Length: 102
Image 1 (cartoon, rainbow, N blue to C red):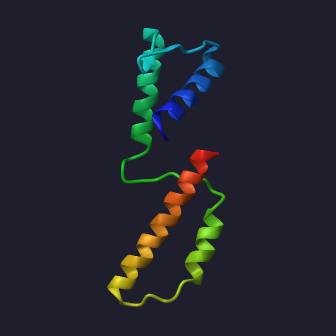
Image 2: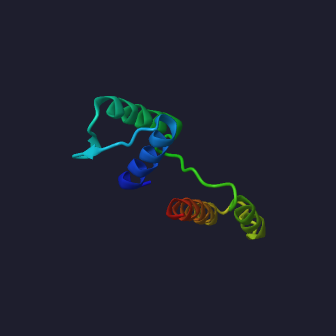
């Protein structure tokens, strides 16, 4: 998620949770209390989502699983296995990007 979208999500959550509007100044909340909450928000997100993982919505799992089951048997061919893996990762990344756009 890009930083602008992340700020928007945080601001909406903060306003619904605390009833306070967040004013941003130079990329950070102007209020030190809001900034503390923003820092906690970012730290929790990093802890919850390691760098080498992606988060996708549940809805494309069935489609991806069906696609996976329909693929040819890759057997012991390493180059085919690597290609297959790359395609699978690409499908998950696309699903994640689609979810972030919505």
